[in-house]
Amino acid sequence: MPELPQKGENVFRGIPVSAGVCRGKILVLGRSHAAVPHYEVTVAQTPEEISRLEKALVVTRQQILDVQRKVSASMGAEEGGIFDAHLLVLEDRTLLDEVIRNIEEKKVNAEYAFHVVAEKYATSLAAIEDDYLRERATDMRDVTARILDNLSGRQEEVDLKKLKEPCIIIAYDLTPSTTAQLDRKTVLGFATEVGGRTSHTAIMARSLRIPAVVGLKGVSNELATGQYALLDGFNGVVIVNPTDQTLFEYGQIIRKQVTLEEKLRDVQAKPAVTLDGHRITLSANIEQASDAEEVRASGAEGVGLFRTEFLFINREKLPTEEEQYQAYRHVAAALKPQPIVIRTLDLGGDKFLSHLQVPTEMNPFLGWRAIRYCLQEKGVFRSQLRAILRASAEGNIKMMYPMISGLDELNQANAVVETCKAELRAEKQPFDQNLEIGAMIEIPSAVLVADSLARRLKFFSLGTNDLIQYTLAVDRMNEKVAHLYEPTHPAILRLIKATVDAAKKAGLWVGVCGEMAGDPVLTALLLGLGVDELSAAPPLVPPVKFLIRRLKLNEAKQLAEFALGCESASEILCRCQAFARDIAPSLFEGKI
Ligand code: PEP
Ligand code: MG
Image 1 (cartoon, rainbow, N blue to C red):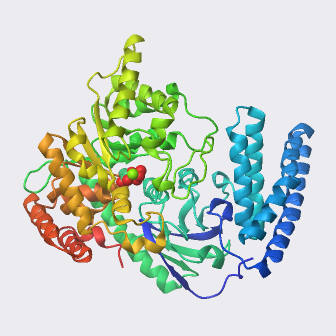
Image 2 (cartoon, protein in one colour):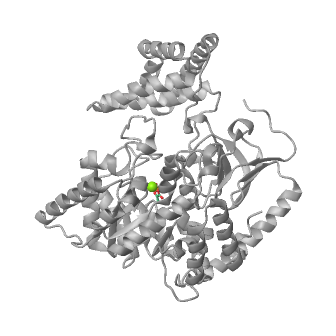
């Protein structure tokens, strides 16, 4: 158990990822929401690891028996019987012997040994075409989560959809799929130990307008449920037991924020046009069909990135073609005649599907992700393409592929689209015969062959989140290297410029839909580099528009020219900050 709450103010500093200030009671989540700890143990420590495992098995067994008793009493013996399968996992000698062998031979901690072995069994069970065995895979994972919680001495998993009172969540990590389920009414804010600004968990927090901080080392162990805290998502701070003075200072920041929000509401219905009369396309990024209303309210002109993978996660079965069609059609019809850029499935990396058991990979961001997955799982790809094509009859839909690394992938993807079009024609189903297809430019190799790609496409959308991670070899999820994740690195700016040049030469438009597009500090730089469109999470659209309306394109071009000639990422960033603060100081008043 963590130490009891200490008296006195205690400040934890991390990385701010979603703006806003909140205060309330803390809820510390168990580690089943988190990455599994993995460390080496010495030969002398292995008996202790095995003993920890045995104790955790005993506690888990008792917990399952308790739950079984309660369920049988309230729902009947048949329902209670479901937990027999869970108990069987705890008695499976083959599995347990293999875990013990792993601890002894590989010299790893009990959590990791159990996770690896159980996941291997669960993956094989899930791959068999048999509903009963697939269920057993789910049982195996449920029991594993319990055992891991017990091994780590954490409380059981909390159902985040049923929180009784508003709270600030503290966790080692939150997956994007868990974050997607958070309700702003009960989750005031959250803080995690791991993660980076462009992890999908952080992106989701911004979309949901939930203040969030990541990279807060040790918080999940040092803080306890029930403590009172203030979370500052502007500056990346969590303050436990804040003093009256701190609360007073934050009261002032919140008041300034309210004034700023009023100013931002003023620009909502106005165009994104610079002081010298250049019209910029400012769109929104969305994750679910129900976000369409938010897009309109934000003052964006359509959707520059619809991340469709969130239609696939947090559910038991793949969405059917019809379900997807309804979702895409809904957004297209709601925002017609504004354009909606639907991105085909970008599964993998940090987004996994609960029902498709994708094997654990050493480097998931370099692995079976996005277009690579779709080109192998053609059934999944085709049903999505057919749904997008059908929805294109009902609004202004465009489509783009994620993670294109070269021409072969693009040609293969286009060939699948042609097959789907031929099918739909044969079935006499209407679709937009001139549907515009583009590609995300988010891998450095795609920039280098952008001229070839451009000949087969109608637009590019720069996915700077991945472009930065792949170019600088910096994991976008890893707080330990977050200081190296530099959007203003000269290499990144040259890649953006090269993409814009290739696009312009071929007559394509080029947008940015990575998180750079939602940072007002970088707006002038991107426009100066020649991008035509910026697409950001709906809450970030008003500040970006506010800034656009206060700059001159000429000055933005001078800033970009300076940046392209500069050798230092931090110097470029300072110049961008000074430029933005100079023309729109009120946007930055929440910053300490
Ligand atoms: C990107 O990589 O910049 C992007 C927009 O895609 P995602 O964040 O979903 O990987
Ligand atoms: Mg990406």
